Image 1 (cartoon, rainbow, N blue to C red):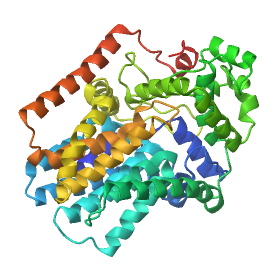
Image 2 (image 1 turned 60 degrees about the vertical axis):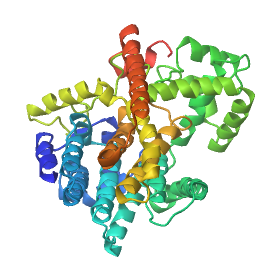
Image 3 (image 1 turned 180 degrees about the vertical axis):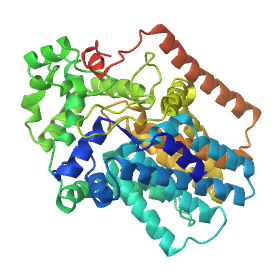
Length: 461
């Protein structure tokens, strides 16, 4: 399995850079690090930069993490006398969409690789009913700490994953309280690690979330506070509030100059303002967040919404980072884009699958496959739920782990799904409704703009 992933990696050598990749590579070379992108990734990159030019070292790292992680999962299933489950897990790992994105050097694929290897190590020992050695736990801990620091919302992945792995019975309420406390602690500690330990400067990235939500509320209510009426009028006229992403509010060609006044406020002030606005206009806030969640889940959306399939060329740059030369690379990414356009590439489908599998995994929580599946589902669903409150963009790459975790949970539970006729019928109807509504939306709506600039200036929605 690892060798197959590595073979695909040779087609993409030395990796695909996106805009974020180039920004971080510039920080690696200059040493001027800020927190807009994860400082931990820059510091790791600086450690291994001498091993090779450009993005190659990080590309090797993330492909190795992904390949070894899936390799351990597949091998553990074969060793547990579940060959068909092992084959299914291998097929998931070789998915054109998942593997196509893994060839892009970016924080989300670093996150995916770290999580997969951590889970693969746990599955290797747990599915064999073996005790996990201290050395293995140390490696898992390092991988999960790295994953947690790669994204601000990664705490919604790693903490639920750990909470549902222990053998000892713990009540659901107690797990929930421990999880909430741990997430709040991690969210409080992460900025300290970024700024004091890793030496990153503040970039103002934390202000994007309250600005996104405040602007959306202001466009729906009579009193646009804390925006002025003139600022609200500009935001509406220039279509700067969009379900898809926050970017028009910061773009100089759209509403960047309009939001500069509020952007100069402190982060704490903006969040206090947001709390007041939510209390005063809960319906407007809920409408905005549900609209963004739908866009992020890629359910009732127009066709050709950007950032679904992985890129097939390097972002323009002056650092010599080029598009992989293999003629097979664009063919693979075409397959990835084709998969992304099907329901298998919709995050909403896997969210529904996770919700359906959750009670089945809970009933089997005393068995190792059930407990592992439960940890995966808790991790996937907690992250997807977090997008209802904390999210400013609808990129597919944010959902790589929930989709992968849901599919692996289905594989783990596949030996004893134990569905009655009524449950099967209900599940089928729900899936048909979700898929049917999504397809109707894509058939009825106008295609989304193909370019980033087009999305910035497109009508709101």
